Each structure stands twice: as C-alpha cells, then as structure tokens.
Length: 124
Image (cartoon, helix red, strand yellow):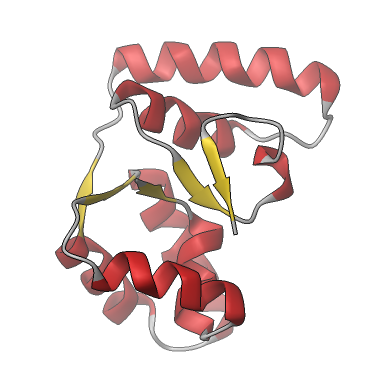
C-alpha cells in the first residue's frame, strides 16, 4: 500500500479516518509513499504546527519511498492529462502519487475525493 498525504494527515491528526490508517501503520506490512507526499506533509506541518521534521522522520522510518523516475513521470503526465479534462482541479501531485502506486502494483490509501473513481484507490 502507498499512503498519500491525506492518509498521513488523518493519522497525525488522530481522526476516525486516521485510526484506519493507524491499523495499517501498526501492522508489520511494507508501506510505501512518494517523495511528493513528504513535501506536502512537510509544507502542511510548517503551516499548521511545529512537527514537520518529526512527521517526516516517522514517515521515512515506516515507509519505503517510491523514487520518481522517468517512467513514473511519463505515466503521471498521462494520468494528469486525461483526468484534468474531467476534473479541472485534478493536480499533478495526485497523478504522481497514483503513477507511483501503479509502478509497484499497489493501491493508494487516501480520502482525497480526486481518487474516488480510481480502482487503484482505497478510500478512507
């Protein structure tokens, strides 16, 4: 499973959706995330509280990072172009996260409504 920014923030805020994420984090399964998720979590944490480095360190200890390479970048561009037509606010970061998950045949754990119509997403 690849955890996206939405899932991580729910976890860090201790919400009900975050409890579902916590079960995955507490399990002994390999979790993954994308470098873009690290950037989003760090930025959000800098703007809302003082836990940016602590959160990043925790994510890095618990997850393997799916490195953004040319193949993922091109797949993300295709996903973005196709979905931007249907959903005007579909962002390139979401496309990168989805392409990263697909590169490893994983699902994205998220609550982000941009992912609701993707079979690759597990909605919180």
